[in-house]
Length: 403
Image (tube, rainbow, N blue to C red; front, side, top):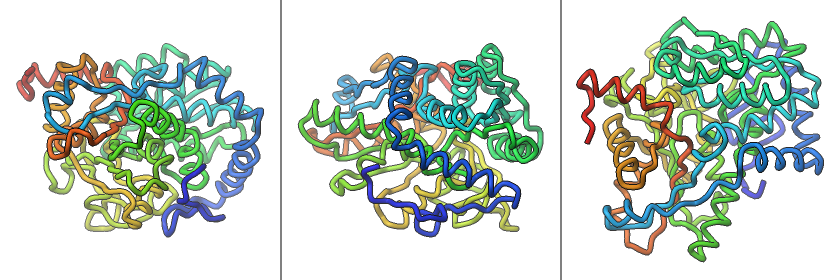
């Protein structure tokens, strides 16, 4: 990695990260960490990783200038890093390929994963099928209902989908149940975590495998514009697509890094998942990071229209970037996200994921305030096919109107 945000030997970015896990998981995590350190710079591993990124997923993904949207807004140029054009429709496959190649080298036979919007679950199911491994995906019961298409895609590829029925029945509970299952089955099972969260070494592993986004975006912007962008913008739930984009620009101080969280229905407790904007440090799911807490200091109820963003914590590297002042974190509401969802669809013929629509919403607000020579790169982390049914139902209930 080229950026100077380093992780110490105990898995901390500054004060964030670590391994706050049951004693029996420590040797398993340490074995995983040693495996990652052994192979991350190994030429054969890198060659195999690049082979699947190129031949299986279809990388590199293009950097696309939204000419129509840019002209309509009348300000900075808006480019999209088209992660929606990856095989399976999101950035998630970059990470699942990398982790499953480590699982193969560790001799694991079964894969466990959690998923929110279902894109990580789909990518995990696909790469497990590719490598001939059994796969179980934990998904909140609420998310199973609102992401039926992705649930069916996972099952088509041979994965078992287990609905998490505790608590709010969303992403946090899916992680809770996946971790609990892993503790019982760790000898022959690999936990393929989908975001830049969790105990060490997951945050650094996920950043490494997603850093291809930022590397490509930098090269492409230099080729198209002859210079670096002024802004790199990405949505943040756990934060993997954002850390992937930011990773290659951290040292380029002239590039502003902006993460966009969901402010949902309002900024009242339980109506949003704006962790970095409104949270405070706390320990959850084996790591220390910014976290939304209730009155007892436990993880607070959260909400977002997008199933991939409703998580009450965030990747520890994002917390460190916030405290350093290197990245800025803002929020966008459900309405702003759905407005952006329709605007991109109708100006460019590109249907964005609701997650990515939060980043786009902020870019659409920012662009008109900037000079026309300024450049904004938005990470379009996924395509919106998975969300069309949810949007259609909201329109039929009168909660939304088709513009």
